[in-house]
Length: 136
Figure 1 (tube, rainbow, N blue to C red):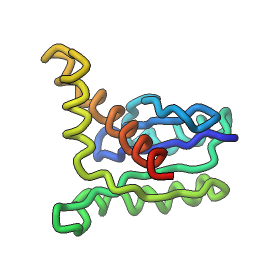
Figure 2: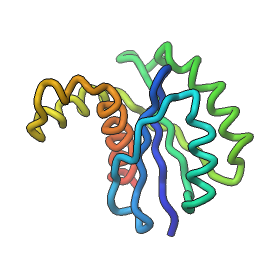
Figure 3: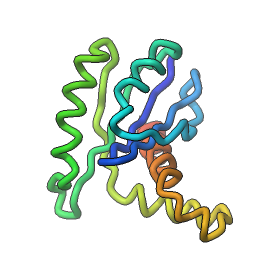
């Protein structure tokens, strides 16, 4: 089997999470500057077998697209051109940032550590991935 990769896309930073090869465990991989994301994904997929890329779909409470969707759509077009052989799927990412912050509190992280927005992005990507695995 191959890995599944999840992306919590952000204007400045993007959280990335990945499964193990058996697709049982979701783990945070990294947080990367969004302008370096495509080159990171190209390099990562050249070294690791990835069978699916999940991209968070930000939604409002009324189920309409969030304003960040206008940033994600051009990224997805570039990603499709870069990695056409890997299927992509969108996953509702509502509340993942709040859930990530709560996870940091529950795990006992100190207040200073919880201010690390890069960690929130990585945990959010992990939550997106866990949600997908749970509903498979």
